[in-house]
Length: 587
Image 1 (cartoon, one colour):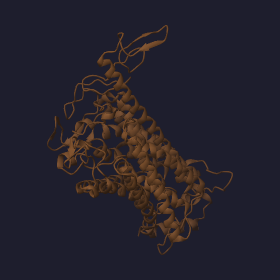
Image 2 (cartoon, helix red, strand yellow):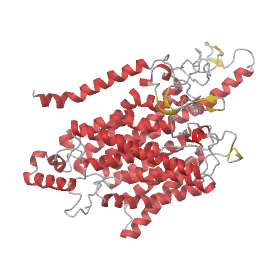
Image 3 (cartoon, one colour):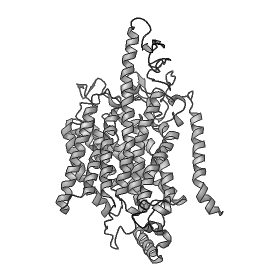
Image 4 (cartoon, helix red, strand yellow):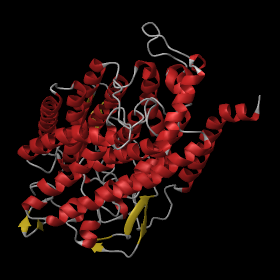
């Protein structure tokens, strides 16, 4: 076997082995007795049940029913009661009641996480249907494998970087899950600030606890939080698979997806959801509540859209997308029913995405978040349909789908903070904005087969800014350690936008948008460039013309319905013409 053949065959496995060994070493170095940046409270993780106190678990597991307070029972009769004596003590009643609240929150978060995981099927159908039949198996394979690759990167180090320092700042971990007190080791810079009785460790950059879910993160609530955060990350990792479809090499996809889950996504995620510096802009700098993102317009969607933008720019358009004068040509997808079914699956999963981001089934605001999600999606589908009908004389089904998804992306940031009328308006604007931006991006020479940059990038940014405009102050009191008792002189007032008297929130949101784009374009672009120089990002011209199914994954998507060509069947003249076209586009 030649050296090049050996490298091509075994390099991925060797790199994976090195990755596992290195991250396992990190996990061992981050064991439970690692000193924290901010002195952590005495804490023992509870893998079997719940953890929520600074000195002891909320519940003492027992042999009768794991996770409940100590009780008594008759194993012969099969009866059990959650208290020791004839009547429960006040402490036992409190523990049982608290157990019920945390149990509801845990189940709610897990079920919503399962719904978000099922959105992967929606993305697979949507993206595959918008591509040509000769690339169906390859596109579907990427949507399948990105799930495994994203989990791997996030498990080994992504979760630790994103959530491992949640209690290392004054913001703290999610109280509805008991606070996750073990995640308290934040890498920070700058001087400490005291808020109430809590002193932070400076501006948070990234967490340092939870590699491979070991040590303090081997805890019932922490592991569940990992699952929920992981499925959100996987949405971000999926977005580039559509934008780069029909010319992205399998090896480049493999490495880039690992990088997204391992560190590209988690670092920015930490800055907003892990107690990091963007969320601290409120209590440390007086910039309203800091950057706020209820369910991920920026953390999930804008990150994915920015990555799609820079990678599309670096990879270049598909062969035949632009004529000699640079005018875009339409390249139609092969299966519109698949596209529309995928959109419905995504719309269903989005209820878990948005309402589930409360992390609490006991939070009455989940009904508002869910209803706002539905209203925005309907408005987006409607306005995009009318826009296309008026502009081209026909209601384009694919644009109706993208209009609905664009609205869902935009309402994600603000679903918990705005009134229903505002949700409908935000979604309606998104439908037009999504359709218009597809043509704009196409006309500036960026080829995005599925409109991912428009749907996730443009509307992710719009959703963040919309929160800064329309948040009405009825929810989010104490968010990011700001306004626990009152805000803007009003008791119980929460996150408030420009139209309701707080211009600082809008500016905070704008900072979050700019930071998200800058981070992902710079770091994601650099990683993609390095991968391109090592294993190559784009398939050869003859492979792209023939279709990626056979050359890249070895399996045709439709063996009985279309003729799949091999690269060898593509004539030399076609290949030369394709290469000349691509060279001209680069100039």
